[in-house]
Length: 328
Image 1 (tube, rainbow, N blue to C red):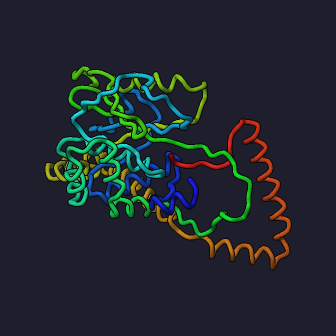
Image 2: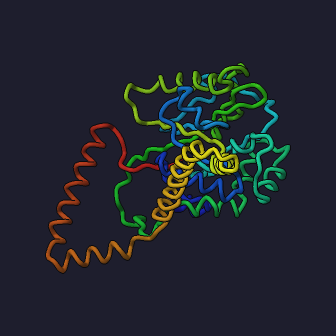
Image 3: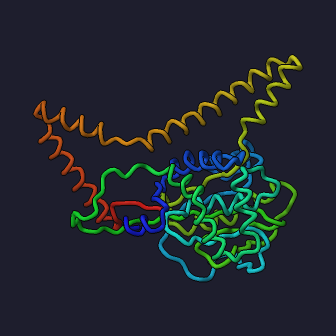
């Protein structure tokens, strides 16, 4: 997306790295008053998913290379009665995926602004709903607050344009007995059919759908990532700890304290990483360059940086790729 397009839409570019998504969207969910978090998933086996229960949705991040009007798997459901929004502006993809997920979780507690926005869009078609969602100033501000500062602009320098990799986010989740796929660039929600309520429930059906999709990528491909949208475990763990301590079950309480400490450390790390991401490093960079110049090391550092960049460009050309990433 160009700087002009970004200025017109008001939605700033966010990093598409899955680790960034995990940190930033968990913070976004918190700002929306929703008691959910996002975690990276490295396996879809039942053991890996057990610790994430209750699990509400999978968010699939993949390199977007264009798609057909018809779904590759499953069927469009034009009569879908739940919440579904089109992506009508660039850069809003990740936040829209979150909205398409939380809009279909029955009884989910949420902040007043989000409650009012979802209520306002009831009865709208996906395109109109997308316009309403992306016109919400407070939601755009919450999204933009998670974007890194763009203190240095390359516009107007006459630099050659390079192909950019676009990454897209979609959602898989249960709704009224079926597993649905929500893709803001598709005409309608995609139904992948009913699932068995027994056993692993909806995650078993979703696993087969996602694994079939992953199988279409070359072996060893790293062009996709999977994340889990699930209940924030902190309130539940704290309540369980209080019960165990009140009952004098200290051994079990000690085990739970370890889990609480681990989860708390993870969320503190997310907050710290987000603070680093939003920080403006121009002053630090200027001071470092000045120090290198005074010590007579700047020319050598500049030459080394140029060589490194040329190597990166050569590797990218060898793979037929561009040199920058962007969110769709």
